[in-house]
Length: 146
Ligand code: HEM
Image (cartoon, rainbow, N blue to C red; front, side, top):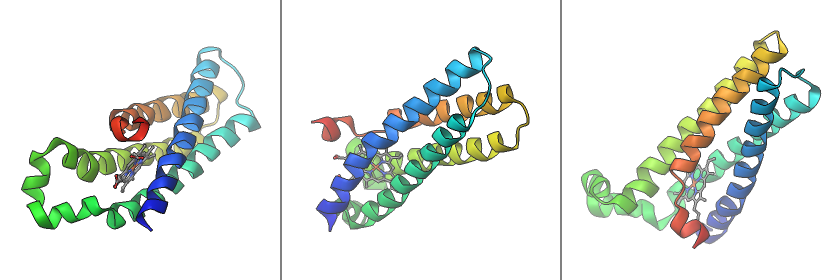
């Protein structure tokens, strides 16, 4: 169970990063180029929302089935916070990524309510860029790519 969920979370992360980078680049290029908002832009931002929400669900399951979770009962909250690796997996990565996905959700719903092309694209550009920066800041790169 643990291995399967971990692998899924690990591979799904490629999809999340890929689609988020595409959405950010697309929104930035079209915002600065003063381009029209089209059906394609809507589909990219919606797809990013769905893919990232699925990662959130997979991540939540992984959190509780991972053997890392038992470190809480072994070391306590103080012990977890004192160790950089445990803190990253059990506190920083989940918390910061939940905030990032919340930003994607807020950006998505705000952009839908805007009335002009530029306002829609700018909203996606700002919120999705912030989310991308947060995600990149808290990925456990060593174990993922190593
Ligand atoms: C879009 C958001 C997220 C991305 C891109 C992401 C990506 C990743 C990556 C690349 C790893 C390393 C996998 C490996 O070592 O093979 C990982 C590990 C992990 N993630 Fe996420 N994650 C996200 C959200 C979350 C959330 C919201 C939670 C929990 C609520 C979570 C919980 C975990 C846990 C517990 C691990 C460590 C698993 C272990 O080594 O036992 N992730 N994540």
